[in-house]
Structures are given as structure tokens and as C-alpha cells.
Length: 141
Image (cartoon, rainbow, N blue to C red; front, side, top):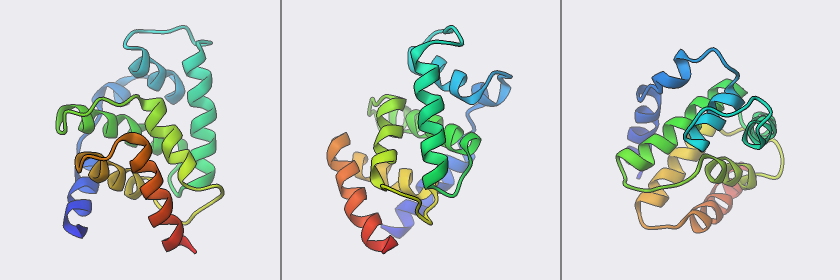
């Protein structure tokens, strides 16, 4: 299991999401475009939702908003392209927001890597998030 997690974390790090890096727009805007599948207005509901999610996740995990946004986009891409699993960015990020109720000394990349492994092993989104809550909260106490 540790080898699988290391491999997934490495994949996330290497799997550059060039569309995000090439954009000059804000991270919430770029995530909103990915979520919608087309260019959106800067005041679109998705942009506002991602602003809120990034702020919350930044307060709970070690990575900053930019890193969390890039990692999340990569996770969505890995789930779709490598695992054949469709999941929205909002679901992924909202799930990671639910894992901890307050600040944790856990890396976002490690948490979402575990999420990918659980999803790849047949867990649906809700079961994967619940499983992460139980495991990571017990490790963080």
C-alpha cells in the first residue's frame, strides 16, 4: 500500500497540468474553466466556489492555494485518464475539505493520493471520503 501511495504521489507531482500553468488567470478561475468545460465569466458561481474551497483547504493542509489547485486538477486528470473514473473538481475538493474539521499537519497531496487509491479500489466518492476521515483523523490525533 505504501508503494502504491508513493507512486500516486509521484504521479501527481510529475503529471504537469500545462493548461493551468500556462494560464495567467487566477487559480479559482482556472479551476472553474476546468469544471465548466468552457471559459466562464470571472464572477461565475464556480469561480466563487473555488475561491472559497481553496481558502478553506489552505487553512487545513500544508500546501498553499496554488499548490492545492494544481494538485486537484491533476487528481481529476489522473482519475479520468488513468483510472477511468469521472469526478468533479468540486466533489474532490469538497471531500478533502470534509476530511478534517480543522488544521491538520497533513499534506494535501498525500490525502488526495489516498483518495485516488480508494477510488481505484472500487470505493465511491462518499465512501472514499469517509474512509479518509477515519484513517487520517486517527493518524493526526
